[in-house]
Length: 85
Length: 197
Image (cartoon, rainbow over all chains, first blue to last red; front, side, top):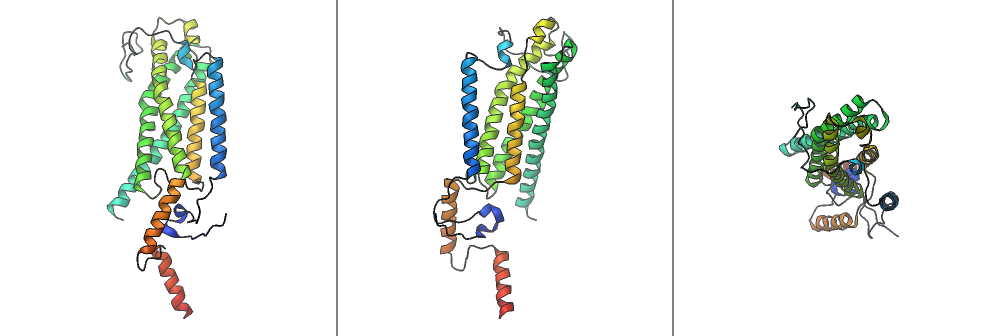
């Protein structure tokens, strides 16, 4: 692709990039990142399917009858450790 | 230095502080997470879960929101824009994704902390709680990738950015006497021409 390159446009060094006559192709590093994201996404879906749709530590938690207790960074509750709701 | 420049620099300082702080807080969280995943001592594990709840709710989440907010503000306030350059766009998407996962995980982490803080929770139940190690390692990896993008700013304009630049270029060319070059380059060229003659 023939490109007419004019540098110095907008006066901001690299921010200006090149002004080209035709739309520049997607950079290779963007394509590689996209491919990596696709592979990770597929792996995630595969793990979710194998784990039965549940992942993470929340699967170990007992179901909550009430709303999660509020965190208090300085408050000490009845248990002496806080988070007593 | 005008008021706008001062405001931009202040915004940049807050953005850098919150972004680096976010990464540091995740590293501290990761240390506690490793304790829950590897140690057998119930006191250490209980304390680690409680620490994780505090670190996430009072350090990681506020810093993440501050980094996201200031990042968007800086992009909009400068020529970089939000959607013009691939590195800005990808940084934005990664930050949005990391923040979304963080906000979802925060409730789970707070529940883990609440269960660990309850003294009626037995040692066996404590060991069965699991850890968030995979999430915190992946989160730290994403933050490192965002940092790399922001430091190296790899070249490449999005189709939107390219068309906006073309528009601006055409607008500048239609102005009489405007070469589209910055003032310092015009001045340098003038000096070169005068010295040559």
